[in-house]
Length: 258
Image (cartoon, rainbow, N blue to C red; front, side):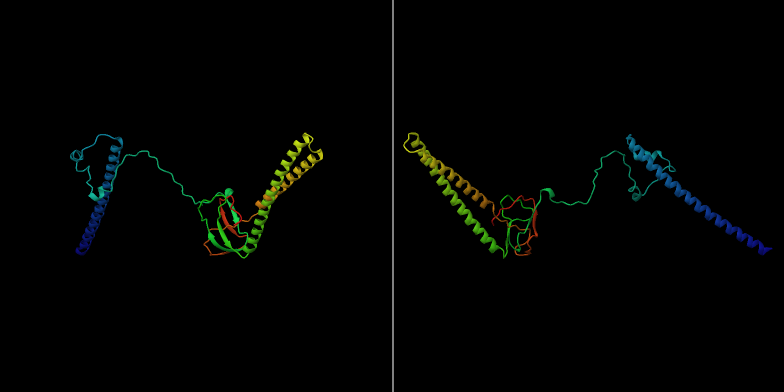
């Protein structure tokens, strides 16, 4: 009987100890929960007072009026993480980032191609430079240049011949006009026969036709020429092939005969 009693007493004591521990944990959880609720209430109250724009409350007076059970004192590091501000409407900038490419207007770009194969020996225009009508953009060194120079010299000779022919035809026309005017005055007073006046008129018409043909020849020679262009290459860097693209920019035309 004595042994049994001792065992029962030990079991009762152990049960009481476990009950006390459970009660202690329960009270601890209740205390933490109450603390969190109190902090939340304090933050809500502070936010409400700030949003209403009411009178400022003296923190000292509030601390005096509050009873110890209704207030919670936060540690400095905890208080620094609590912020209260008044909500207000603001305009936020809206920005959209999309991929894109900057390029020339395709409707105003004129591509220039190599008219013959050769090496770029001089560059007079770079990317981004403004060019004007008649400006030389560059030069190519090509075996075909000899033939082109011969053709150019031949064209220049033809042009000079056409100019000389035009000057001769103009002089002939001026002489024919003066001869016809003189013959008209003499025929009016019957100093010469009408046949001489008619011959002077025919000579004037023939001189006029010769001048028109000479002027047409000059115009035809002036319209002939060639264009030498280049791209944004380094001088002597690359051999270009006939028909390859040299330049693609907003250029209307280039000067010929270079």
